[in-house]
Length: 304
Image 1 (cartoon, rainbow, N blue to C red):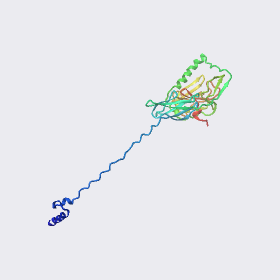
Image 2: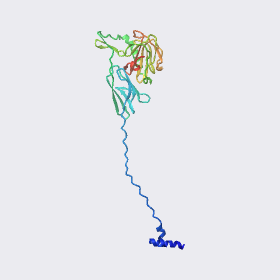
Image 3: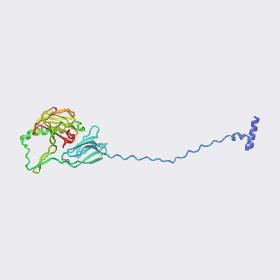
Image 4: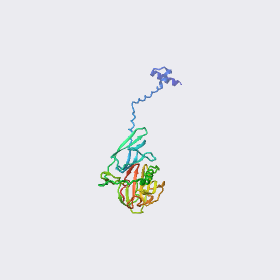
């Protein structure tokens, strides 16, 4: 104990402290931690990318008698080609549209978006050179006597009503096949002009494979007309392919389907014949989209 006090006394002698202060002086004062530097960095938020403008996407045959199939803009609630409202599939986007034999060279494809805004796109429709025959004779009358029209009117109304039926068929989404193969005896669009007065043009394509040859459905659909003995068409079948598109088959020797029957692409539906107003056995195949008459050759491509 005496030694400790001697040691403290010596320490005070050196430092000049009072003996009771030596223990306090011997302790080190705590060192303050350095202050954290204040951040001077700044951040900016990038602006969102510009909204993608609405757009149509389609492929097809952009020519008179041709067609297109594609999608309407995302978020669109309806679409039109000219003044024709388009039917879309279950997804609400895929559509079909077509161009009449006498379609103008430019037609508007438009869509109404969910917010009420409209978007439109001009489509260029290529003209075609038709097989036009000019003859120096007067155009003959249609022979539509009262007695003839009395028989014809119910037939005309049946055809009109069949083409207006909505079945929900989805054949319009398929690539069409030839209903039968053989010599093409009549091209779509050919026409005679009688001393400057146009006659009606050929609204389909004629295929002459021989009498009695079976023919098939070119795409899925529902039979909306299957009748015999019509004045001009003879034995006739009309198939609705959906979206306003339908096929008619004329002059058959036999019908193998009934009205209301669903058919698949490639399914046997009848046999080639020469019934009605016909000069020989052939199948007249015509296509219509709403009121537009279309060229079947543009749906199938050349016959192999």
